[in-house]
Length: 187
Ligand code: HEM
Image 1 (cartoon, protein in one colour):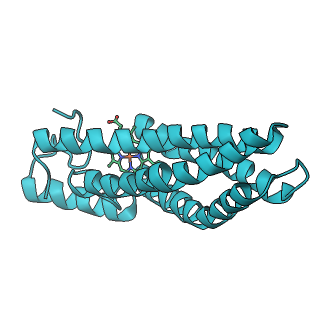
Image 2 (spheres, rainbow, N blue to C red):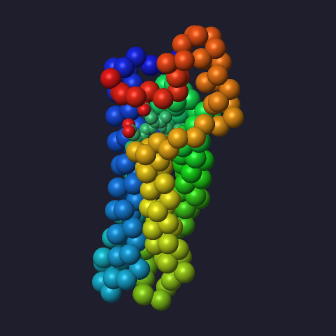
């Protein structure tokens, strides 16, 4: 079930833009979270938390889901497969983990936005919750670096299943020069 080169490039473009866009959106979110925590200007603090809610719901969550779905398409639609290479498997696990944490964070984000809309926050109000938002955004950036780095380096290392599939493919084609599972180019 491999994609044609044209379709693969289209799907890869969607995957890279949504995945790297996710990273960029979290960086913007972090800037807002730091502003919300440290600014002395009440208007600025309110604006930051309101903008964080919008960014989370309308940018970060859709990009995270798009990254996951397009990643699955890239895996299943190419000979990389989903369970054949450790780098793909680790990306899958890290992305699912990051998405779950993100979805759990939407509640505290909306709560903070609600409070900011209705009251004027002093720097001591809800301090733990505000620090937690900064920490989650910063941690999220670090975690999202893992799939980004793995994608570029694509370290060798096949899973047991991947090795079995590779042997089956060599045996059935009788062609040891062609090793399935490592598409060299996107063209
Ligand atoms: C935040 C999460 C992710 C980031 C930042 C990310 C980033 C990238 C980037 C930059 C590439 C292009 C690499 C290249 O062409 O040299 C890529 C390709 C790829 N990604 Fe992801 N990815 C993410 C999530 C996932 C997930 C969840 C999967 C699998 C379930 C996945 C599977 C793949 C595969 C198989 C390719 C190779 C596609 C090909 O060669 O046609 N990615 N990813």
